[in-house]
Length: 459
Image 1 (cartoon, rainbow, N blue to C red):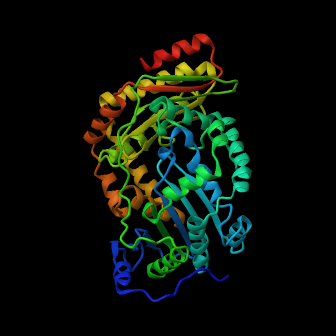
Image 2: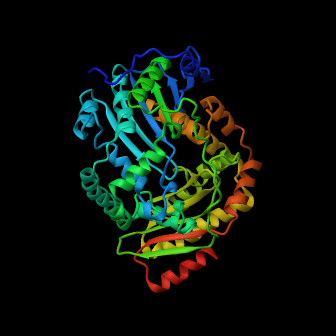
Image 3: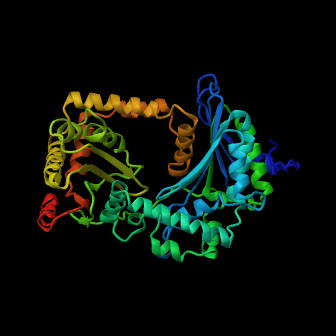
C-alpha cells in the first residue's frame, strides 16, 4: 500500500541545517542498538533505535500530556481524546485507520497515563512507511466530530463501569486518591461518569490544539529501520498536515512540578459486596529522577517482586493468606508512591496487614541480608533485559526516556547502575521510604468492627 501525503518540495538551506542536527545518543556495536535523535524545525523530536536482526518495527508518538494536566472539569479529557484520535481524520475514516493496519497484519493501540499519552503501531519492517503515515495523520489531522464524541462517550462510560466491576483495578485508583486527595494525580485517568458526561466536542478540540503541538510530541521508532528514512517520512507527514508552522519553536522540557502528596496515615475504606478484600498499604516513594530509584528498585524486588520475595513467601507460601500479593513503585516527575497490594478473604485482612507491616518495619530498620540483596539485584538485571526483547518495548523505552528525562541510557549503563547498588544504599532508602507512616486503601465487605480496627494498621 502506498503512503500518502509525503512532501518532496525542495528545502531551504536553514531547514537542511535544522534537519541535519542529528545526534547519536547511544553507539551500538555494528549498528545494533544504536540510538539516534533528530529535532525538526518546529520542535518535533524523532528518536530511533536500530535492531537489524528483526523483521518488525514499532512506531509511536508520545504526547507530553496526561490526566495530571486536567482541571477538575476536564477530568478524563486526555483519555477521551486518545479514543477520538482513532475515530477519523480529514483523510481517513475510523474504518480506514483500523483496516490499513489490519491489512498488513499489524497492531495498533494507545494508552493514557498520569503524565503522558502514547499512540503506536507495530508492523513488518517493509510496512513501516504505512504505519508512519497513519499514526502521524491521526496525531495531526483528527477532526473530532460531534457525532464521534457522542458515540465514544458510551464506550468510555462502559470502560469506567468495567473498571468499577474489578475491585483489583479499582483499589489502585482509590489508593491514588488516598495519597493525593483531590489533586490531578489523585483523580482517575478515565475520569468519572459526571466529568465524561459533561465533556463536549468543543472543549476536547481546545484541549487537543493546546497539548498536541509538535513541541509537546516525541516520535519513537525501533526495529529494522533506517533513521534517515524515518526522519524524512515523519517530516513529510507533519509538513503535509501543516503542523510544523514555527521553524524556531523548541521542544518542551521534561515535566517539573511541586510535590502533591497528602500527609501519611490516611485510611480510605469502600464497603462493597465482594468475595475478597482488596488492600493497598503504602507511603510516599521517589520521583522518577531521584538517583535513589535504583536502590528502591532493588528493595522493591526483594520485598514483593517475585515468588522468592519476602511478602510472597510470608503471606502466600508460608500461611496461604492470599493468592496475589506484591509490592510496586510509581515514579512521577516530582513525587512517587510505594505500595503493597494483597487480595484476601475479608476475615484475613488484619493478619495480612500485620505481616506486611511487620516486614516493612523490619526492612526499614535492618535493611536486607546479603543473600536477598544478591538475588534481588540479579532478578532486576535479568528482568530489565528480558523486558526489552521486542521492538515495542524498545520503542517505549526510548520514547519515554526522551519525553520524561530528556536523555537516553543504554542497557549496559542501566545494568551497571543496578549492579552498583550497595547494601548501604538499600538500607538508606528503606529507612527513608518504609520508615514513613503508611496509608491504607481497602475495598471489600467490611463489618463495622473490622473497619474501626483497620485504622490501627497505620497508627
